[in-house]
Image (tube, rainbow, N blue to C red):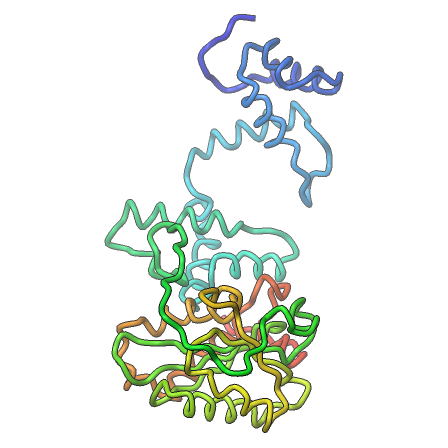
Length: 335
């Protein structure tokens, strides 16, 4: 059949696709018969054969035609533009500092079906920020970026050997596979102004965090902050801590001696090996940018930020909150 310019598939063509596909013909053969591109046939079958809570069958030409007509009738408007109630709900959740993935997952958990995908929310925000620059919806995203950015390697600095450090590979299985509570990651959140910092502690299983301001970045004060954080935790919630190779953690042996907490260290120049706390600090930057005056980072301010983080649903927890997971209880979320 002669090749023709691109156009929407007709019902007759869809019936022919169904017949040839059911007969076991390849996508390329079907494309040649219809005078279409093989990618068009592949996309048509894949797009209209997906299982969902309302459709469990395979490719149906009549249903595919109706779906095509419905998509054509509504045009290219984003789902959030077409559904004002869903639009309001998503924006309200974004204003509560929840990511698109957390919003989509929590809506699915609460309604028993998928209302919108996180990718649709991202696309809408990026599209809206591009076309309506006076309304910067991207500032509601966790990292407030207008578009996705490639990751870059970490900068390398000269490091001094930390005494009696134990490599990460020797952590117990409960820490490696996140199957036990009490295996923590710790790091300092720095600011552009020298002096104060924020100590962040992250539980690998529940994703629960603790934050505490430190007046200096000296190892003695950082260790004192860790001692205070662990002091009120039960023994089954304080088993190990993982650090990077910063000199602020060189007094790690004090934790082993006073609290019987084992300490482990990432390989040099590989802080991503404690990715949980690294990601957490990236999220906290929304509230505490690097240019923040560290003297304004009070305990009360940190507690409010910490509580918001610990009461935000997480996909990795089945869209429960870290607080629900860490304390093994379910609570109603505020809206």
